[in-house]
Each structure stands twice: as C-alpha cells, then as structure tokens.
Image (tube, rainbow, N blue to C red; front, side, top):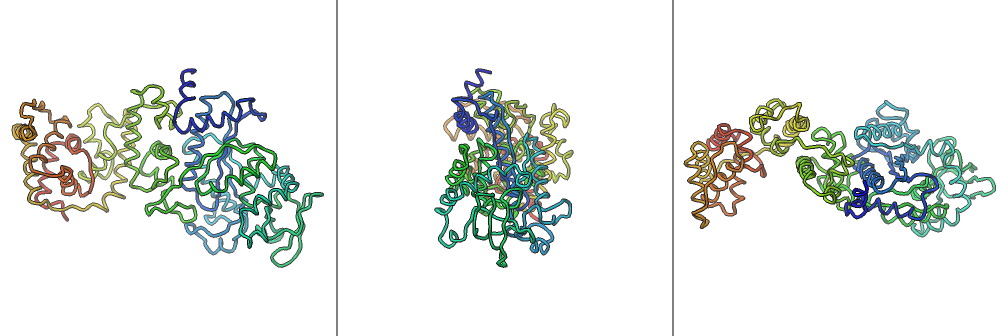
Length: 549
C-alpha cells in the first residue's frame, strides 16, 4: 500500500493531481466535520445529458484518488437545483402548452409533462439518479427544494441577511447598471402564484430575517427568508451552498469559470473556506455546438449504452477533461477499441504507468482482463460484409479466427458483437456507398484474388516488392493463411507492386470498393477474420459490380 501511495503522490494523472490539491487543505489538521466533501451540482431544467454524468464520474475518480493518498473519510453529494424557476420550456419534452402555463414556477412545482412523477423536477431527478445508479456510483442525493424547506439552509440564509450588503457589493460589480438597479440576491416565491419572482427588495430586515418587496402587481409582501419561502439567485446560491455544506471540492464546466471568484468570495463572506475546483471544457455536438439539456442535442447516456459498454463511455470522459471534445456517435467505435487497448497494456506497465492508465481510474484499481479477441471496428466491418442481423452470425467468424473464444468465456466480446450489429444497422449501413474500381485498382484486386488462391503467386508478389525496395535477399515469410501478418504482407506487397502512391490510395480502394466506406480495418486482419474464400468472393463481387446497387 505504501508503494501505491508513494507513486500516487507523484503521479501526473489528473485525478491524482486534483486529489493532492484537496489533501493540501488539511495538511495542518484534519477536517472538523470528520470527512472531506466532494459535490456535484445538477440543474434539472431538462433531461439529464451525458455531461452531467461526466461531472459525477470525474469527481468520483478524484474522490477515489484522494482515498488512495489519504485515510480521511469522504462523502460525495449530488445536489439538484430543483427549486429554480423554469425560465423556459425545454423543446424535447411533451405537453409544451402545459409547461408554458407553469413558467417561472420552481421545477418541483411544475407538473410532470410525462405524467409519471410528482413534478417535472422530480422526474428529472429520477432520471439522473437512474443514470448514476446504472454506473454504480456511491453518492448522496440532495434536493434544493428539501434543503430549503427542511430548514437545513436556514442558518446560512440568516447569515446572508446579516451580510447582505457585503454580498451585494460582490454581485453588483459583475452586473450591468440596468440589472444592478433592481437586483437582489434573494428571490421570493410568491405565496399565491407560486412563481419565483425577480423583483427588487424594499427592505432586508435583520431584526427578524425577513424581506419586503412588491410583487409584479404592486402588492407588498413580507416573507421570512427561511423555510423555503425565498431562494437565492444562482450565483450567490453556489457560494452559499458551499458554505452550508462545507464543500471541499466541486468541478464545473468552463462556462462557470468567470464566476469562480464570485462563488469563492460569497462562500468566504458566509464564513467558510472556498472549496478546490476543477474547470472542464464543454462537450460539443456533431456541429461543434455546446450540448444542452434544453436543446437535447449531443448523445444521451441511454443512447451511448445502446451501442457500447459503460466502460467505453467512462474512458471517453477520462480523456483530456480540459480539452473540448466532440460527443457524437461516430466516436463510439474508437473509444471501445482504445479502452481495450489500455486494458491489454495495463499488466505490462510499471506502477507509475498503471496509475496514469485511464483503466486504473475507471475500475478504481481493480482492472479486469480484456477478452476482446477482435476489435470493435473490425466487428463493424464483419457485420457489414456478412449482412449480420444478430451477434450469433458474427460468432461463426469469431470462433474460426479464435477457436478458444466463446460467448460465455468472452462476455465483453459477446456484448460487443451485439453492439456492433446494432451500430452497423443504425449508422454504417445507411451511409455505405460502394464504387467500381479504376483500371489500376482492377488489376491490383485481380492480383490479390490470385495471391489468396495460390501461395506461389502470394510469395512472388512479396519477393517482387522486396526486390523493388532493394531487399532482394530478404527472407520470405512462412505461409500461414490464418496469420494476419502474412496476409497483410500480401496486401501491402500488391499495393506497392501496382504503383499506388501514396500507398493509402490502395487501402482506400479496398475500403471504398469492397466495404462501401472511406475508412476501414487493417485488411490482413480482416481477411483472417472473414475467411480466405469469403474474402475472395467479396473481391470478385466488387470486381463484377455486384456491390454497387
């Protein structure tokens, strides 16, 4: 354990770097509350998107890294800002007119448009929790509605009244003059309409902790700030929540970064040390636009899990959190294959390399063995050429390529085969576009067929390639029709011998003529998996124009 801890204290993996920053807060004495508190926030104004999941996953990775370097107990709170007023109606939910009639009410007072839960806020909270539970996160769920109404926030709200002028000074510096003239950190909830009001305060009363204001119709009201009658504006709410809970760490998107000094200062005014924070870059959709709960663009968690494993999504989330990344369906195959590459690399690495490997953080150090004997990208091509409708069809090819593999003994392979068929039919098949070969390509393809039928032709092609490169004395490979390296050497040699410059033009021919795609697999490996006779038939179909339809 001490070797692991020592290595973790110098690891450059970002979860350990952030964990060390949290530990430094308590280098003189442990926390009085008895634990280190990690928090993530969620605004349930729309259905949870994958970025929300990413916050909890990344925070959990930092929490686990902290537990590696420290014996201080930890907690993780997922806090839902469900007392916020619904400022606009999300476009991706039903019952739009009903929602429109409930604008400005707290999300937990807006009827559920899906008619399944007590409110829209309760519905979105349930969706978030279901998503998080799918991944086995250990967290405590906090609802802002309950937090305000139960009195847990009362002491900090009273402190906000006592420090009202100081907090207002912080806020007014960040506001335009027009908004500053009517701004208050307190948002009353109208006793009759239930709407969250954005109105100026006539007075903030320190003697009885109430606020006095006129509503939109000019009627004066006085309400206590406690008991859920009043909520804080979102920026003061951030800092006040940190103070009320004693938060030690929270991460959020880059769009919050300019507000960090405001959050910190309000937390300090309310008597607590500001937490450590980590700002991540935003996710982008296929068009390079920020993904949004209200727009419903990008990929949902459920959509990713329709085509790939939970671990592949976790792998995507680990990579370069401070770099903006496209979050679209076309990245899924790459993430699956890279995840398994890292699994295979893990046992070969020293402890420093293992701590830097994403799979260490995905599996909290209990890293499984990869049972993926065929890459996911290759499965997609196999599904394509075999017109597979279910994973059982793929297993016939897989077991010929790797006879020892079975659905029971290779569950990740079995799962990936099912995902590959689904992904192929939904995304690859609709975009396939075959073409006829050019004269140069036709000659090369005919040569490839001859080489796959006759080892003498195959070895002659390799020998010619060697001679042309000035390596006539180089030993020829051993003939093994199941060896993908031998098959790749044939494909490579024929491309060279037929004058493809650059050589990638030859591989583009193979992909476009035979697979109907712009990119494809290492072709020797594809032939080994698909089979010699099947590959010959595929090439002959391409030459005869049967694939173009």
